Length: 135
Image (cartoon, rainbow, N blue to C red; front, side):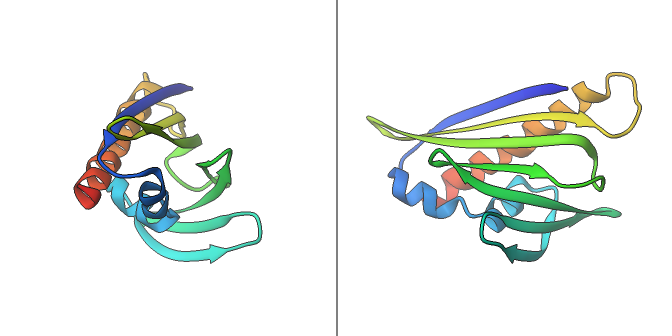
């Protein structure tokens, strides 16, 4: 398993950033999948996302003032994927930090490193999209 972290200060208040960080927006901002369905449950939101030749359910929860989500079940490119999004009020805006741990489902040499590289790109795209939307 590999862990990746990306972070950026966004010129917006924590309240504005929190409103932007809803599950379907996050999935679309990462850029690899499109949202097929959204199921709001009492304790979580399940987003079924689709990409080239696959569908995967992602379970989103609010935790400690941030967002936590994980790939559910056996479907998808990862054998394990979980992501935390934390926001912090700072002097010049809001510090947004994405942290994700991943393991690739396919038995490839250096598979977890490949998964981490791919995941870091998705998280960087999400931060860039957030910054463009709120800037």
